[in-house]
Image 1 (cartoon, rainbow, N blue to C red):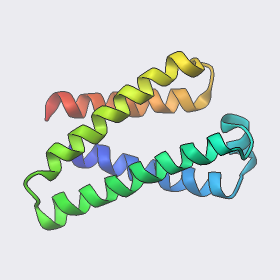
Image 2 (tube, helix red, strand yellow; image 1 turned 60 degrees about the horizontal axis):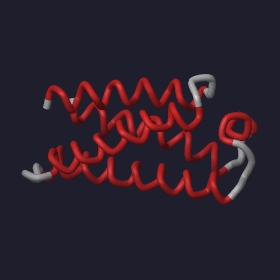
Image 3 (cartoon, rainbow, N blue to C red; image 1 turned 180 degrees about the vertical axis):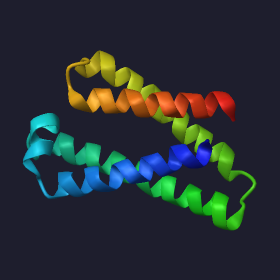
Image 4 (cartoon, rainbow, N blue to C red; image 1 turned 45 degrees about the vertical axis):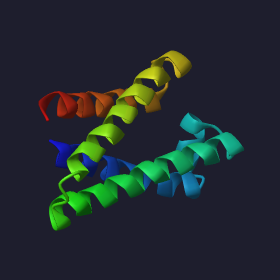
Length: 113
């Protein structure tokens, strides 16, 4: 399950970041205009992407013994921030719906690993 959660991070964040950088109209509708706040969010997403990729390599290619634990820490942070975003933004924003789905996956991963 850890590999699935990390892979979902990668598969979701690559297009999201590409669309944010391209300032796609769809991103503006849900994230707002190109502001410092949106750029900071892109940096957080970029960090999650980079760490997810690194952990996938560490687990699959290297077989690093501590990488699964590090992945659990990353996923726990994501579950917390995605859950907190519901209170901060509300359920009507489409980003929140996708965040909750991913948080659910990560919560199951954490509960079963």
